[in-house]
Length: 447
Image 1 (cartoon, rainbow, N blue to C red):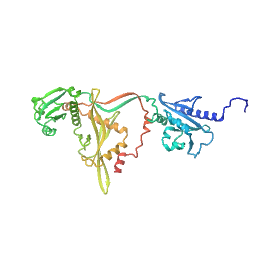
Image 2 (cartoon, rainbow, N blue to C red):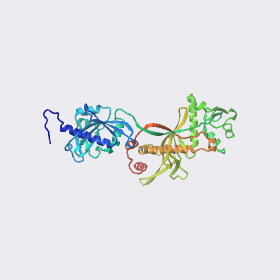
Image 3 (cartoon, one colour):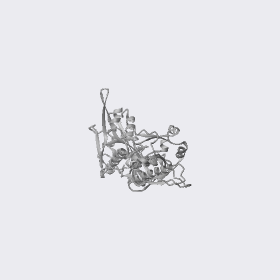
Image 4 (cartoon, helix red, strand yellow):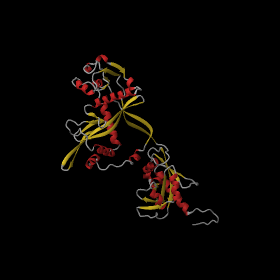
């Protein structure tokens, strides 16, 4: 039934269609457990704003997206069944691309409850698309539905999204790769020696039983270390009448760069001593690597991870056939170690890596290529596991006897608490899926 009223204001079919499109968008946003705010009567190119909320806790995420709605009442333009094309005007496109907040274009057909979306800035980042002004919507990939939440969050928090409006409000505990040294030795000892290099000193000390510790260096015919050189172990390598004892703080807290360098050198020697005999330092790669076991067979070692007991492959062998010959490459677990002083505390910075050899000792000629390949394939979890392994290994390398020989004790990995963080599900979607089930073997097969 229609009633004709002369001179009355009319509500056009176009306005009704536009409002139905916006109502459809609002309904989908509410199903996401997020908030829709309409643009109001004076909007110029933006119909509303989506504010994202944590779907579990309901906490505001301080992430916003602007929305331009376009509704159709019949077929979508150039509809092929699986997708369609939609043309936008140069004027609208220029306006959307100037905003400092991500803009979504949502094309809908309210009569069938269909809605499809694209991120304007991301889609038109290619110059060719900006020239044509045509958008291709894939009806599967671009469907706007309650399951679009993760994609919207990714778009809102991407580095190129525009103005940053704050991180996700949540409690996060960050486990670093800094292994704390909770207590340093009390003293540094200095004594005169006739030796100028460490190697001949070890030639003398190796006959001592028990084996003396290795926390010492030779500099300008002086023996400097964490050991009391007045003890009988050292009588054949230094003048025990010249032994001096200093508080360790005179080295560890010094502002003199030479003394700090000497102290870091002592810590490195202590680290090498802790790693002996299973791992050792490689000067050519400036790293510490797991030595081949006596059996020469692949080896796994247990360790206490961040949450549970586990084990890690520390020495692996990969055999492949090349021109009727069987060639074996060995992979050694390794790490780069740097001692750093942070806020009056000393830490060992652990940076995991690998060493590839062809006989357990000599560097494989494709070492660099294999290393870069496996690092591309491994994710954050593998790196965390390796840091945890080395930290646990070094913590376990002391008892009452070993502390007497090596007074440097390693503690826990430094952790930091934050009141903000990232959405793990959204972040994991960014990581490229690894091909195959054994990426390491795939890497070797390619060589």
